[in-house]
Every structure is written in C-alpha cells, then in structure tokens.
Image (cartoon, rainbow, N blue to C red):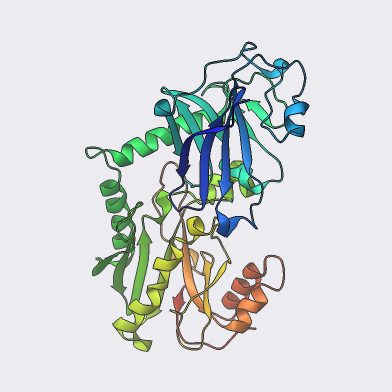
Length: 368
C-alpha cells in the first residue's frame, strides 16, 4: 500500500491553522489542523473525505481505521462506487474563508469539499464533500449552491478574494469613503488618519476627530473580515454580531492630544485580536492593555455605553450589521468583577451606566 502523499498544504492568513490534502492509492482526504500554539485549545484535526480512488467498501471501512489509515467512504454514501482518478497537485486550490477558520477545496475549477469554520468549535468532525450523497454522521453531501449554504458560501468566498485581488474593482476605496463619511457626519472632519494594518490585508485605519471638546478615535476596515466563533454561537443571527469597529473618546480638558493618541493606540492591537487568537470581541468583553491610562488595567468594549441620542448610524458591510464598540478604561477590580460570573461584562457596563458614565472617558472612581 502506498504511503499517503501530501499534494497541497496552505496555512491561513494568521498562520493559526493549516489545511492539507493527502492521498494514497485508496482515498483522498482534506484536513485542517491547528498550529502548535493552539493545539491545546483545538487538539482535534478536522478531516473531510474527498473521494475514493478504489471501489467503495460495502460497509464502514473499519479495517483501515484499526490500522491507523484514513478510511474509505462506504458505498451507500458514495456517488461513484468504482472510485475516481487521483488528484493532480497542480490543479488543487485551497481557499480559506473570510473568518480564517475554515476552508474549501477546489479542483480544476470545481468545488470538491468544504470544512466550515464553525466545525473548529465543536467536538466532532463535520465536512461536506461533492462525492457524498448521504449523511454518514461526519461527511455530508455538498450538493449545489441552491441546495446547500456551505456550497453557496464557498462560491461567495472565492468571489470575495477575487474582488480584493482585483486592481480595477478593489472594494477598499468605497468602504473607506463610506466609513469616513459616516464618522465625519457625526464628529466633524477627520483631523488625522493612522494606518494600523502594517501593510497587510485587510486595510485598517484609525480616524481622529475633535468635536465639542472631545477627542474621538474610530477604526475602519476591521469589519471587512467576519470574526471567528460568532457563527456557532449565534447561528442564524450571526450577521448581527460578526463584524465590528471600535472607538475611543476622551474629554480634551483632561489630557493632551499626545496622551489621547497613546490611549487610542490600544485599538490597533485589539483590531487584530479575533483572528490572531481565533476568538471574537463583543459587548462587555474586557481586554488588558498597557496603553490604558495610568491606574487602569485595560478596557471594556460596549455599544450600550453610548446613549441612543449619541449612536452612530454605521454602514453595513457585505449585508451585515457593523457594531461600534466604545473602549472605556477599567480598573483591575472592575475587570476581575467582569470575569467573576457569566455575563459579568454586561453587569460591569450596567454599573458604569448607573454611575453616570458613558462612552466619553473622564477620570473616575472604580464602580466595584
């Protein structure tokens, strides 16, 4: 029996996960596994059968599993019972999804398999294959774009990356203009603009504004990429939570402009966190930061801190809502309180609001 041959290997954008395609003389498999840093959190390699290269066994391929080999898919689940041709490495294309935690396998322009991002966060294997015609508990039929959302999303993802690689139809100028227009309508002209993407995709920046004695700093571009985790947590409502921008505001009477810029620079670190850590940011989440004002440990993110009359009407992006989370400094005791109970961040935000605090930071006493 021929040893498995590695015919494709592609890491995701943040090098947190790696996708590979392997085949021997019996079967082809598509895998995603976590890099060493994330092995403790995500120890299970995700495996997706792609095609049999030999006639399908009539029953589950237990013999292969007992020998530590990748099992062939049994005949009742296979479209092609006689086996198909091996894959040629030159025709294999792996495309990572926008949230950087799932991938699709394309071959000669055809979609062969999908490992969805949300499968990283559950305790069993889930994969979709074009050669599968019946659910076997781990491998599901891929179907078509009209019958399976996984197929449709894989096509959308391929179109997404083609747009971003196009010189003529790059989406960034319009996204940039839409967000700056939104911010300037609410906070006046942008007085400074800081790129925070370090020359990598996606383009991200902070726009600085001064309005009614307050320094405002708002990110743009963070929402281009949906956050990991959100789809499995919110299911059909994921579109309301998977994209965000962040903001920081401080009254000018308490700080110099340089101090304000230094505190706001915490946003640039937070902007990469969901994809660097395979996590997400939302209402009530707290984050440590050395950029917090002296005496404070970090920040809590909240849209609720902003009163309805001060809300910013954010643009949508890829038909999703964009949440604007205000970062307000918190003390060590407050962050410990937020971590001491389920939904503690919500409780902390409620305490801050009850004490008269809002999205504009001013020096204050601890609320807990």
